[in-house]
Length: 120
Length: 346
Image (cartoon, rainbow over all chains, first blue to last red; front, side):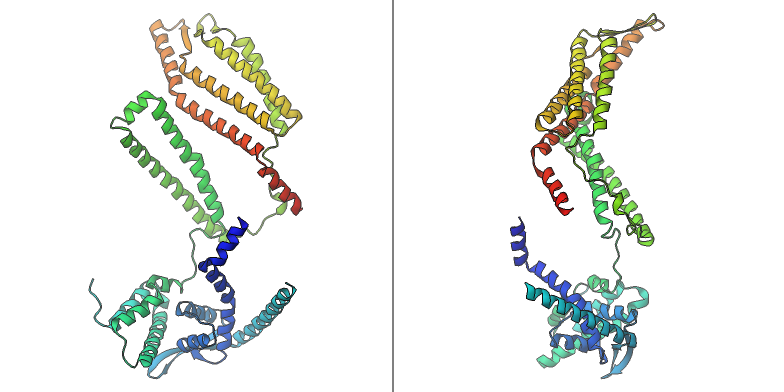
């Protein structure tokens, strides 16, 4: 039974996708905050993340940006660029502090994982 | 519904559909940003291709973004009628409702249909199929009512517990003791011995004759078959005393003792069902009442006893099923393995 379950999970793309999604979820917040140390609007942010290997769909990104803004980690303003109104986001001072804390935590988790994997 | 004439109208329709599901105060802001994102994506694609996108390509792009209600849903806070914390308890209660109400209801109906000719004649006039459909309809409406009530209660609890946080405040010391279903509580065995002894004494002294009551004004006489029931119930009560006494000394179910309990209960159920059908009341005499009236009462009592037969069958089957399950439990090692796991954790 245990073998069967293990075998099933390894060959079930949906299970793998969900696990990857869970793994990426926390990292995406750090990545978004880090990218927004430089002001950007949603579409360019999405492209920048995708170019760096962290593709995120718009259905996830925009609600996340709103949530981070509500939490006071981002600030945004509507501005005209290329004759179009766009919403620009950047990291707030609180966001900068939180990003530093998250990076410290991420490095600590990374180091722990490295240790665990070396032991194994 | 008219079809969109051009890609711009298609995009406008999509945005309108998303807007419908958004909270009013956020609609303008979210739609403006979503619209800008879509336009940026279309512009980029058009620059790559060196031409404007046709309607089919815009359709693909929108389809890729997802159904409007799902897109809007991502902007909304997560809401539950019954959240993940209470859901296991909700599912457990629904199972209890199903087992405690629906299953017995089906069994009672089936027994009445099988064993009660008057009930069958009344409900299966147009055939068995229509009787099943009619019973099924009644059962479903009550089932929906039961499930609906449980769901409403849990929805209210969900809101209450979110505010009170009572699920967070708990004491590990108040958890129930590890259950060993093969253990026989000594208190239960003592009660069984005492009750059965009292029954035997009363039964032997008061019920040995088929004239169970002979007073100046009232006389009750049972049918001559009574002697079978008298000896049968007395024998079963003695057997139960013996079993309870052994259980008192060795309070753990074993295969032979569980089988003995099944045999006793099955014999008791059969005897009781037979008693209900035996028209056991033979004569009732009350001096102040006419003989025609007492005959009428006698017949009515016998008739109602016979009508209770299906319910007795169900109770007998349930008791036998519980006893049979006990034999299965005792003879499998699963229970013991569970205890070993608990012991290994400690």
